[in-house]
Image (cartoon, rainbow, N blue to C red):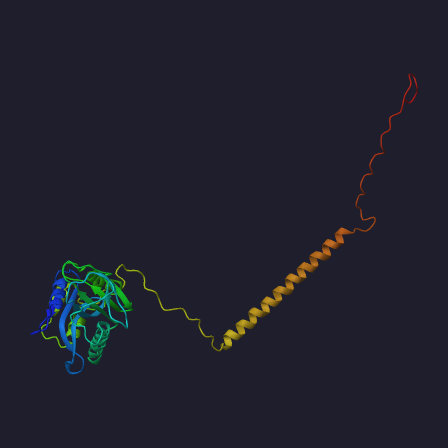
Length: 295
């Protein structure tokens, strides 16, 4: 991972801890820390992370004291840890999520004004607790694209999972696209194109069909019938006439066969046909006496 901090930036303790958490990640990513975006650079953004699959804006908040327990985040009210108000180091009038959404909008607008398509820009509030402090859950999703993470240099598991979660999307951020984007955000000490490629960004967009599967052709569209030509019309009538003649030939053959079979079934008298032989009379035994004639 590449980490670039704005020249002359003064980082808070939580922001320095966040930078240390990023430096140990092997993920392909460029983290630009402490940016001035918005109209005339009036919006300060803690960090913008460019991955090969998208952008996320980070708002970093630390704690004034050690607090352990269950984190409860409310969209309207104060955040609490085990029923006690979360004592954040920058607990101002604007909530961390509102501050984050303003930063996301400023980054996206700045890139669009530079004629760059940022796609869907995500955001996360990273809470940096003291070492040895356990804050759970370590990740909470407020709404699609907006998360709250608890991470420090010793326990940055959820932050790493969050960054690697972008792997679900296609790799559409090449080295040239990242280079143009951070230049549009006013970063003057960003990495070169060669450094981005060495970190894992693609020089060109990858082949969407790497295993050589046959590409799907255009969808089939039924042809629209046109006006038939004179030759097609004549051929159609000939085919129709032959079909009608064939039907009459078949019907005539059937009628002829039926008439021929009917003539055989009822022969006229004296036609020479033999009548069946009558059955012999039944046998009745006759009682005979000795020396009786004709017995």
